[in-house]
Length: 166
Image (tube, rainbow, N blue to C red; front, side, top):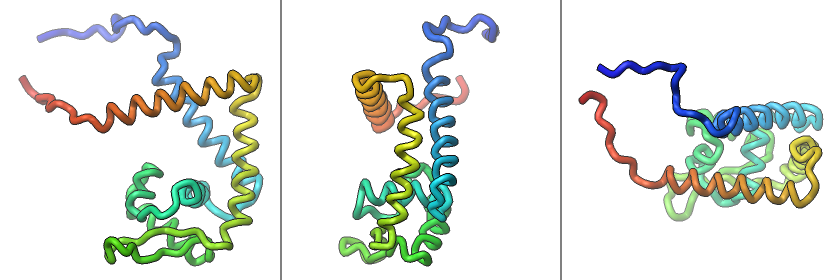
């Protein structure tokens, strides 16, 4: 049996490790966005605001796709969509390609809410890029897009089976 000494792990070229740094940034970013959404008073929960923002950016998607894009279970999304529909912000329409599926659409009532969400996004974007010039902000964006693309590509490749026991 091989013994692993946790104090003797492989040397990490960056401190903190890049993955940990990205995780911390994502957590802080989400927290700042939640606070900013409260400040602009959308009347929505942060998850509902994220949902309609995604619907705006990627219209014509099914509920299941929206749940996947949000990183939540489809059943969790249903409650958010029910409330948004009751508020007249979205409507669910039958997908002509599959009558069992529903496509989510924004209504005109979403426009003033989206304008307030845009205010919150602008506040957080200013915090996120504070101290960066325009070129640095563009470089950061490009680098993060590259990281996202690399991870998405890796995620879509079939993974080899790893035996649990030898």
